[in-house]
Length: 237
Image 1 (spheres, helix red, strand yellow):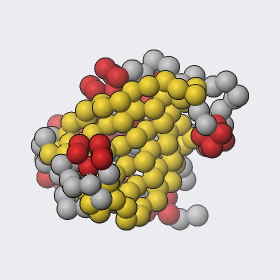
Image 2 (cartoon, rainbow, N blue to C red; image 1 turned 180 degrees about the vertical axis):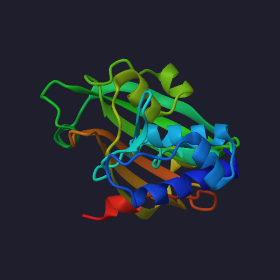
Image 3 (cartoon, rainbow, N blue to C red; image 1 turned 180 degrees about the horizontal axis):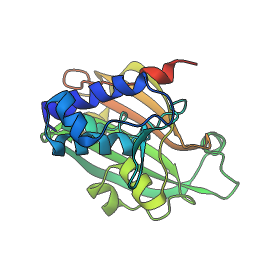
């Protein structure tokens, strides 16, 4: 994505933070004039904010500000999108994929019934073909049974949630800690066993506050750069 696109996204988010629910965004032509960018750049930036849940469009009437108390976080917590914003090419390699029984802890976390299964998969995340992060993700099988290894190799997980299941992420809880990598994880990341790394634990929730993803990631501390963006309005309670 271009620097102009990224800058426009940031400026529009700031602008929206001072607007009220239902306020109309200026026209594409006006935004082009205000920010001195092309119509294509404006259209792509506005489209991204529509997809993120900050804006909504009514055909023939325009683009409007959506209620921001529960902001859609899909775009902001995406390795794929962040890697693109950094000017690099993202890639995912699915190392393991299995459908299995959930242990008692996972059943409680994901609010699963007694016989419900889970999908568990490991992915190696790369930027410009450099291994950056090793992820183990768990999602409920009953809800996302159409997901398979081939699909995960082609699309970002949150895009799959959105496009196949009409499901978006509306809340994310993450914790960061210093850890170390061992054996297969270290080998996949081109690191020595017991090397220090950044460990990220993520719980993602849908609009009904139901957890739909649990991920543990191990990121190379020497190469991994993690950045999140927030709408300032969402911090005002």
